[in-house]
Length: 439
Image (cartoon, rainbow, N blue to C red):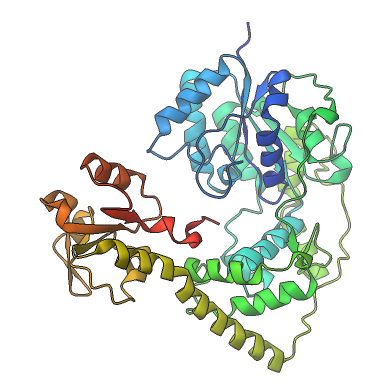
């Protein structure tokens, strides 16, 4: 009897991955009727829908792999995370782990025409990060995703064999199945399956990760240019504030890019640079002798034109800077208030001296010690505060502890094992700051 399939859906980015992951998550019971399962694996970060994000994390890794093994006994299993494409070595490590206990391992990937993928990524990073420079600067310096799709595919092929890679093209005219969308295409493309789904059984999620549209794209880009350090484009702290402040109006989004950011010649040059690689993918992975990977040949997208005058740009930057600084103060006030109320007459210890710990040092909390288990930081001073390892603290009861790292499960467990109670002897800073959400 052939073993069930362990299928890794690896993106790529901007190919409907979030919507597809939500579809799989919300329809897992229906999928199981067709002998497929999308197990929940205690996923951290962006959403609960992405079930592959923690497979390379040391904490809880064995438990998650055990859950996959158990699920494989009854179903074909789907694991999804678009970050696998972004970090191919992580994917290769995961595939190696899977092959140690299972022989029927496959990968499915969606490819989008390079110019449209770059533009979509660019729009997203204007929307959710602090991108504000030109699209060519973004593509060449900060995007991080390869325009050469062939290299990643060849690495995966070397690991699991070309016959175990399913390449799909993210174009409406190439979608298969009844609905001709990403959902029916994915169901139709499941390997070794002959599924004819009753779509009335499925919950179809609305479109997610919509593009910033029109004036709002330009306004957001101007807001992004106010970051403290213009060279630090991925300034995470301000990024989160920018995202929350500028994400207030529903009509700022659209289901597709109404304009482009490349000139026609830039678009032609980008596609020409990848023409041979794309043709090789079509021949090798889609059995298309003509080497045609993308059917969409349209190039004449209107280019976005900025409308704001210099005065309007200065006004937007000024108002945004004022709002952002005020919001940063407001957002940390619940944590500061809780510390003052719970600390009482005890000494104050901050556990963790990273960026989140440093935020608290801007306020008159006057901590007595800082705790950090990094040997390089032992017995040094931070803002005239001594840094000590946790195992040197004898009497924990004399301290009120503020745990500052974003991922604090291990520290929480350590404090609980010492008999300390959350909300009485310590607090977790990420319980009070909503900006700890990972974007």
